[in-house]
Image (tube, rainbow, N blue to C red; front, side, top):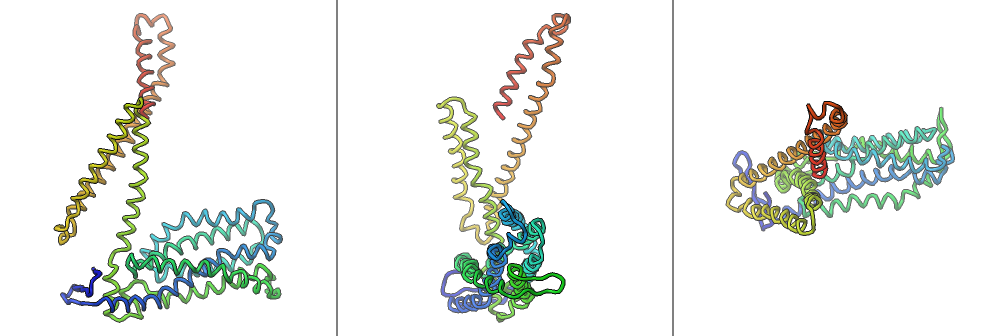
Length: 387
């Protein structure tokens, strides 16, 4: 792994040792900046142009032609983001399997094609369908490009590059309106359907995006190991400097997403199930103090002496802790599920037993029924309170 020193080295599988300097690494980074960052910035710029052109189209008469009365235009905007939210994670999962070289250009070409199709919508319903499809193919663009950059840049280098490509959205807003105005002035044309005014905006902007998406795979590398613009030596340096960081940091983000929100939930759950101020004070302190034991153990989990072994001991402790947490969570769910079933059973049998105990046979066959039902109701209340 590349270290922040004057020189670094890497031993290949054949035993060959390759050494590089910080200056060589900076030269490599500049080369990556010139080839990769402008490309992804243009792709994201086109993504935002096709996303936002509906606002310019509205100014040019879209709402009037499609009779978008009331909140219909707002719904056309909303459906895009609803679909957008749900496709981001699945899209990056596919990207990991297919590779950025083909998946990201496919997304770009797809939302270009959807934009072209939007030029031919005739009603509110068809506009809604077009916007939903646009969200489907645009949702994976930003997370996909971010992951793509993480394959070429170290974590301390990634922020600046992500900022550059995201600035494409601002650039799209800077000239998008001017471009839309010019396109809307093109005279009506078309063979079967006349296209003009706002339809030109969707058609020509989408057509340009489609062509760029089809050409992008010829310029976009998949990973450092197969960059056509790098030498064999530069490919090794680029690959080793960010080896597996993208996947590892992504996994850390997932762990943090599940771990940190649980703390307030555990604490409030314990306090809410404690009776009286004194008990609540003790229970809250007890929960925090037990949790702090984990911090004490964590300080001795990853030791410098375990570096050569790949921190097997630390990983094993973490894995064991996660298994224990999972088993405790499952057992807790089963415990409260059984409690709810027991409480429900009491509700079913209580009327039957009450009616029997009210009869003539109650004193002979069921002398203790009423007291038993009273005890059962107390159990039910305790179960429900604990749930």
